[in-house]
Image (tube, rainbow, N blue to C red):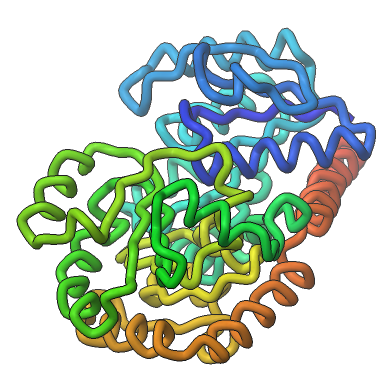
Length: 371
């Protein structure tokens, strides 16, 4: 079986990381994978276990993306095309596969409603549309994707790379120069509006007054970096909050955190939440989009209403003051990650979907034409 994957993302954020997990896993199942991605992207620089086919992809207005993808699909002769991202790939990838006469599936990762006219155009060519969460599944159904084509397959986390590690705390303290009694809280998200960093900064002064040992690490990059730097200074939080950027050693640091906070107002599922769970770290998060599919309130972490600053402040403060509760939630989160969000399970689910789509296509082709 040859699968041609299309991923337009340039950075190794959640979606691209999932593509890498999937292609590596499919390779172990003897699937021949071809990855179409932009030249210079993170996946092109550090490719997974498949052949790379660099193609320029410049977003929804890049009309020339369609003929470029058609030519590539025809040249590669895949059994199936799997489109993984937006930025025009979801629109042009399905159309290109249809023109080339190859079945296609799409993974929808974002928590955002779409105009019905656009959804009808975008999703019509796909034999199956995968939602990462119940929230995305409901949005797709509301946009007119019929039940027969809808499939829910959550993201996965490498529970071998992300795992509890008693030595991680010492690494964190040494790396960031924190005192030995620090309570380390992390936010792992792109520095963009919808991730809610400013909402968390607004409640931090009161949290720090109640718990002066608190230290906050914000991992990620994005266009809000300068604005957040100014706000941290304006709120007198320079000694408390560190913008730590993108860290390739996050798997080695994450188990050393006391708490992960995720104040996002929209979220498809949240890879950072899965990574925290696998590392045995409890999460306080806004109950946005697919977050409740990952964080089970009172069992693996705490959920608060989106935009409720008081509830966010209370939940974070309560867990910082309760080390035994954090340990209980973290252990339950790790067990749930192993049980429900392993890479092998995700790979098996996609492989089953591919086989179903290809089987249905073969049956249609073999069906005799009635006269």
